[in-house]
Structure formats: structure tokens, C-alpha cells
Image (cartoon, rainbow, N blue to C red; front, side):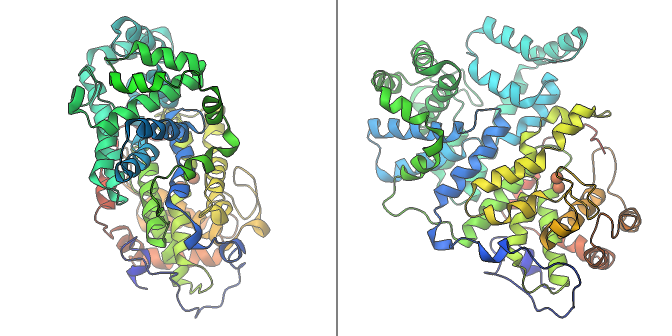
Amino acid sequence: MGLCLIAGPRGCPSRASVPCPVPVSHPGPPQSLHSSAPQRDNIRLAEVIGALTYALDLTEGQRPGHTLRTTVIAMRLADAVGLDEDTREALYFAALLKDSGCSSNAARMAALFGSDDQDLKRNMRLVDWHDSFRLAMRTARSCGVGLNPVARVRHFLAVARTPQLTREIIHTRCERGAQIAQVLGFPQVTSDAIMYVDEHWCGVGHPFGLSGDQIPLLSRILLLAQTVEAYWSEHGTRGALEMAQARRGTWFDPSLVDLLQQWRHDDAWWASIADGDHLDEAVVALEPSTTPLVATDERLDRISFAFAAVIDAKTPFTARHSTNVARYAVGIVSAMGQSQVDAREILRAGLLHDIGKLGVSNRILDKPGKLTDEEFAQIRKHPQWTQNILDHVGAFRHFAPDAARHHERLDGRGYPWKISAEHLSYTARVLAVADVYEALTADRPYRAGLAVNTVVDIMARDRGTAFDASIFDAAVALAESGTFLELSQVTEAGFEALQTIVPATPLRAVA
Ligand SMILES: [Fe+2]
Ligand SMILES: [Fe+2]
């Protein structure tokens, strides 16, 4: 088996497949992998990234469509300012990717504040940080939600005593988002727009405390656009415009606020951004370039790897989980000689199988103790969210069910749908084996990865009940020959850098 099949964007061959020397007794790949895969040259990059922004909204605790509405607002500001086409394109993709670093600080925020990171992020985006009293009140209300009073006070004091942590947390998030834009191939001006999005006009923003014209214009536009959207969602147009006016010259570039205020009576336009049914198409139509970027196979691979990095950065316990699952899955398919399975599709399904975890709070994902029934119920929702998110992405919709069913078992005792063997595709079965193998062999902050023979013994108990026997046997052969280890060590410039930036909080995961 050649490593080229799992090497990622640069090494991944087009429509890779291998000969099929081994007869198989399990169901073939799902029809969807072949019959409904979309035509590549019809898909626009903006459409794919735009659809995936719903996952970023979930992580940020924002209403669905937050990023898309922010993009609409930002592009109207760009028109009003009179930006040229190249700069508008840079802004357009910066707006879509502005929250791509969002998962990288979720674990630290949840641990520091002792609360759900999504609630926290939503609340903190609404508070005026320049108002110390209101900030303290909002912070106090946001600390240790659901905990006893002593614990709440302890979390509040931890936040109050470590103001530099806020700067670090924002720095991590901005840097990560800028890096993802760069890895996806966008120009420096796009990365910079994301890097400086939390700098405030008056100089008390984060992470560098830049002020006025020191802040890139695109970052100033993005800050205003995303804050207006957050307020518009909570308080309507009037509330958003009042907020912008109140922060004119402190948070925001005064000239941009003045442009925004000219839309005060444009009721039709404000109503248009509330039209969720046509938001996706409206944003795609706003792409500035006369030659829109097309989602080539290489770009779709890059996006899949980038979002795998976003998913894996969510908790300190999954530093390389998604990429390794994808690599192991491709290894299994290749070893089994499944020529009818598209290696590229299974790679992407593996990379994105846990994208629904972006919707689960780190307070639960990283909880050091036993989970409550309610917390387990939250975790068990993530495959449904994976399905929902991938259903949104035309280029990935055809493998959404296969990616989402990785916790189902042949005997119907898996979750969340309790689907049994006859409804589990070959791809879903491969991902189920790769997922558990990766989870058990990976290092955790509280334990080293389990030895291969130990993992094989543990998983063998479920051979034929949870796991497809022939897929399991193929995986064991790859594990015992050291091939999985070799696959996990494949390096990818750029993507490797993304994978090394993980939350550092040494919490203990729940088994
Ligand atoms: Fe999962
Ligand atoms: Fe997983």
C-alpha cells in the first residue's frame, strides 16, 4: 500500500483507488459515494466554505447564519468604502473564515470560566469590554454557571486575577484563524484581516493593542460587521445601530460607523439578511471576483484537512484524532482492495466524521469526572450534528450519512440512531473501526495510548457485534504490522503546523 493515498492534499491522487484482489463478504460501498457525488467543476469554493460556517457558528454559540450575515454586512461596507475587487475578495473570504480559530481556545475558556464555552462566547461578544463595571458584572454572571456559589466565586477570581489570559486566549484564536486562511491558500491580506479582528480603534483591543490606522482596514470592517450582526440577532436593527454609535471611536472606526448609520432606514435590506432560506445563495452571489474560485479536488481536500484541524483543536484529548481516523480508514480500504470505494471520499468522510463535536460544550467534552445522563445525551448528539452540517455542504452531502454513523454498531446497540447491520454502509463500518482504534491508541493527558495488542484484545470482544469482522481483521493486520503507526506519522507541511496548536489545559477526559 502506498502512502500517497493518505498523504493529504499535495500527495493525494485524483480519484485514487486500488486493485481488488481480496473477495469481500460485507456490503459494498453506499450508492451515494458513486451515484450522487456532485460534479466538481460546478462547485464554488465560496459555497463550500459558506456552508461549513454553520459549524463555526455552533462553536461560537452564535445563531445559525451568523458568519454569513456578517459577510453580507461586511461586503456592503466594502462597497461603501469603495474597495477594489481583489481587496473585496480578500475581505469576503476573511469574513467567512473569521471564526475558524474558534475551537482552539474553547477548552481554556470553559476551564477558566467553569461554564459552557458556547454560552460564554456568545455573552462575551455582547458585552462592552471598555466598560469595566458591565464587564465585571457580565463575567460574574458567566462564571461557574450551574455550580455552587463558592465555585462560582473561585472561577470569577481566577478570571479577574489573570487578565493576561484573556489576551492569550484571543491571540490563540486569531492566530489560528489566520493560519487556517493561509493554509487554505488565501493571501496574506486575508490572514491579516482575521489576525487583527479583535483590535479596537482606541487601542485597548486584543491581542496587540493596535489603534486607529494601525489596524488593517479589513479587520476594522470585520469587527464592526460581526458585532453588528451579534447585536442585530439579539436586539434587532435599532439595538445594533445604537450599539455601533455608542462604540464609535472606541471599538470602531468612526468613518465606518457613519457609513453604517446611512442604512438606518433601509428596511428592505435589513429584512433581507433575516431571510434564512436564501442566505446561503445570497452570500455565494456576493463573491466579488468575476471569475469565482472553484472547489477543485485539491481545494476540497485542503478544506477537509483544515476543518479536521478545527475539530481536533476543540479539546486537548483529540489532537490528531480526525486526521488519524481518516488515514486509518484509507489504509483499511486500500488493504482490503476495495477498488469501488473512492479513497478520496473516505478520506474526507474520516476527516469530518466528528465535525458535530464542535456543537458540544467543552465543559462536557473535557469534564474530569463522571458524566451525567444529560451530559451523555449531549455528547450523543454529535453524529446528528455531523449529519446536519455535512448535509449543508453540496460537495460533501453524499457521504454525510456514512460519516455520521461512526458510532453505530452492527447489532443495533450503537448511537444515536441504533441503526443495525443492513443499514450500515461499508464506509460507515470502516470509520467505526478506525474511530475506536484511534481513540484507544492515542495518547491522552491522563494516560499514554494503549498498546496495540491491548487495543486489539479490547476491540476483539466486539468483532461481529459492533465491528464488521472482515474490516476488523484487516485493521488488526495493519495495526500489528505497524502500518497504522506509519500512517499516523505522515507529515504534511502547513497542516502539521495546524495540528500542533492544541489547547494546553491538562484536564482528564471522560472515557
Ligand atoms: Fe464521534
Ligand atoms: Fe471520532
